[in-house]
Image (cartoon, rainbow, N blue to C red; front, side, top):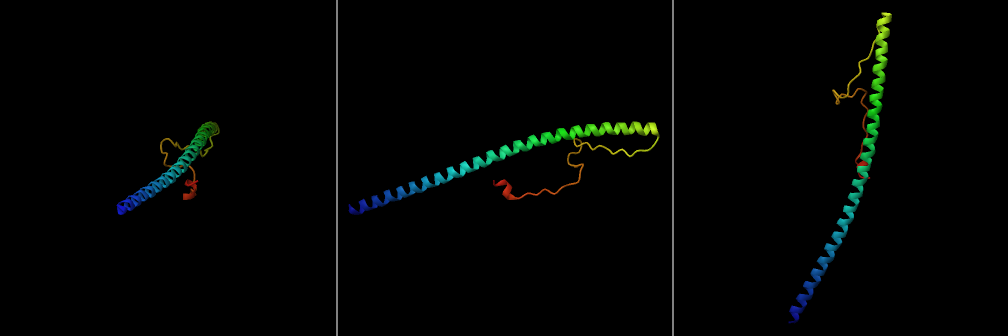
Length: 117
């Protein structure tokens, strides 16, 4: 009978220890989940800002392309009127070949740290 009581006490202690371990694991996982949710939110905000900046840059590119077309048309008229040959650069269309960047390629500096903050 004493042996059964001792065995039951050890069993209750094991269950209590297991419950404490699981509770601790839940707390750690909830904390990690909260940190991940905050990191995701920060990345989403950064992405929204980047998309907005990208939209501004696209609008500026469109405006500058229109200006360049206008200036090229003036050069064409001047070429026709004066009879002089003017070298008029071709305007690249990024919509036709978006993979061909119309300017020199700049290296992109990135590190794993920028994704962890």
